[in-house]
Length: 117
Image (cartoon, rainbow, N blue to C red; front, side):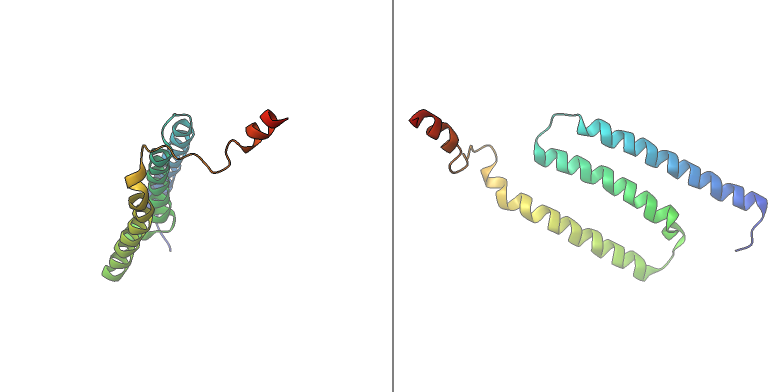
């Protein structure tokens, strides 16, 4: 773990850049929450921003950017694949009902009780 002062300064510079990128992505997260979009699109935007922030943390603060293991790369690729599958399954199961108005059962129950009195 011994390193020269230049090497240590280089690592600190990288950490500061990553911290700055995380701060910028946090501001982007707050700004994205102010945008009026449909819920599925808002979820996609949030997941993209969270994935970017998570990949920065894992890559630099957990030092996976320096790993050269093929097994680790395969495990991470499989994780991403299955995560995407789990995210897309609910979207595909309701995609045939987008744009169809479905009132909730008993949504007007309180209003009907007010009219009855």
